[in-house]
Image (cartoon, rainbow, N blue to C red; front, side):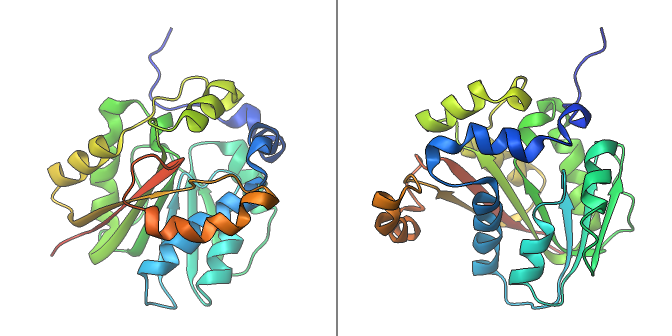
Length: 234
C-alpha cells in the first residue's frame, strides 16, 4: 500500500458541498458563508484592488466568486490535485478565473508571479513531511512583498474536533496547531507573520449579535479556525 502524500478528493467532487453543508449544519451556516468569511478576512489586510491571486487547493472553486466580489478586477487562478474537483470548478465559467490540475508538488508558474497565495484548509490533507516542500514552491511563485494566507482548523476547539471526526473527507486529516504553522513559516524566512483566530460563535440567529465581537477575540487561541498571514521578503 502506497504511503499517503495528500488526500484524494476525486470521489467527493460532485457531492462536496452537500456533504460539507450536512457536516456543518450544527453551526447555523452553510458552506458559502464560511467560504466568504475567509475572503473577508483576507480583504481586511489588502489594499490592492487588482491582485493576481493563486488559490492553491481550490477544490470545486467555491472561493472564486467571493474573491471576485471582494476584489473587483482581480485575476484568479485555482489549482488542485483532484481532476474531478477541477472539472466541477470549470463549470462555474466565471470571468477572470482559471482552474487547472497540478501534481501537488510543482506549482506550474514562473518565479514571482503572484501577489497573493491563498491556501484554505488544505495543509491538514497533506502529509506533514511535505509541508515545507509545498510552501517553498509557494514562496518561489510569490512576488517580493507578496502575501501568503494559510487558513486551518484549530485543533484546540472542541466543535472543530467534532466536525473533523464526523466528516467523511477529513478521515485522514492531521490538524495543525497555530504554533506549528508559525514555526514552519519562520523556518522558510517568511516575515511579518501574524496569527488570527476566527469563528468563535455559532451562526444561529440568537448568536448573530455576538459575531461582531469576533474581531476583538482574534488573539484568543480557541476559535474554530485560524489563519496565518505572512509576507515574502526580497
